[in-house]
Amino acid sequence: MTMHLILALLLMTGAAEARTLMTPEEFEAFSTGQTLDYWVNGTFWGSEQHLPDRKTLDADAEGPCRRGEWFPKDDAICFVYEGDTGEHCWHFWRDGENVVAESLGEDGFSSDVFPGDQPLACPGPDVGV
Image (cartoon, rainbow, N blue to C red; front, side):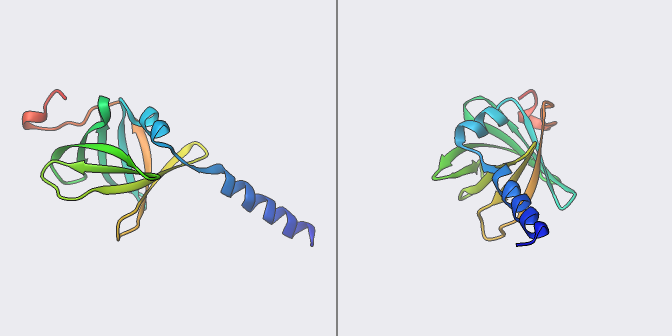
């Protein structure tokens, strides 16, 4: 093997090892008390405020706020929301300092996840959550 090929293989191996699937415990420690902002291909997609006891408050970029909760299912983190049928399951990956969420639904897209500590600004009965 040439030196360039060996170096390329080592770099690829290191990159693959840097990405690790978050356990439910790691996700809970990462998310509780945070508002997670989701970005898809550089476009803001929505935010989800993570409350104690795995409760959430979710708001898509142009949608209303809705209450939900998350739970572990196999190696995924799944969400259910009031007024919505079904569950939305994701893999959350640590990639170095970054977190990436991959949808396990039919759309199969991924999102960059950025934590913050500001609560969502939700009008109506969800004020002050």
